[in-house]
Length: 259
Image (cartoon, rainbow, N blue to C red; front, side):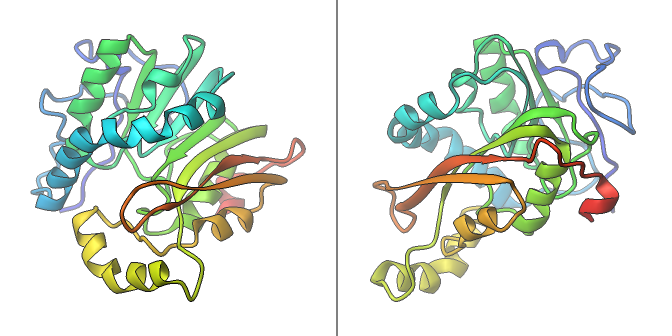
C-alpha cells in the first residue's frame, strides 16, 4: 500500500491541526503529528527504522560531543528559513539562533517523537515535513540554507538529493554539511569499509561507510565548495568532511530542470 504524502504543522503547535502554515509547502494541507510520531500509512515500519531511532537517541550525545566545536562554527550566523534533511532526533537544534525558522524533513517516523521533545524543550520555531531528500515538497528557491549532518551516507540517491537541495536554495544560498566519507583507496580502513558495508547498511538504516560523499558534493553543481577534512574516533567511519557549498547567485533551477 502506497503512503499518501502528508504535511505537518509547526511542531511547537502540533495540538492545533487547524493552524495553516504559510511557509513553503505545496500540495497537501497540514495534518497533526500523532503522539507516537508514527505516520499512519497502513504499513508496518521495519524493525530497522525503530532500532535506528533508538540507537540515534542514545548515541547522539556521544557523537555530538565530538562534533560540537565544528557545529558551533559552521552553524554560526544562520538566519532565515533553514531546511535540515534527516534531522534524526534533533541534535543540531541547539545550535540554531532564534532568528532561524527551521524546517525538517525526516523520513523515519520513529524519530519524530524525539524531534518533538527536543523542539519543545528548546522552544524552536519549527516545522516538520514528510518526504525524502530526493523529492522535497518545497517550492523552488524557498530556503536560505540547507543542513546535512550524517545524512548523505544513507540516502539511496545522493546525487538526486543534491539536485533537490540546489533547487530549493535561494540564489547564493548555502549548503552546510558534516558527513563521514570513504577512506582512501588501498588503505586498510577502506577494505574494512567495503567488507563490512552490507552488514553496516542493515544495522545503520542504509548507511554506506564507503560512499565518496566528498566527490559527490563537489560534482553536484555548486558554484563554490569549501571542504575541511578531519578524522574522528568513530569505528569504521572515522574519515569526515565538513564544509560549505554555495549556490550561484545567478542560478535558477526548477524541478523540471533538476529532474
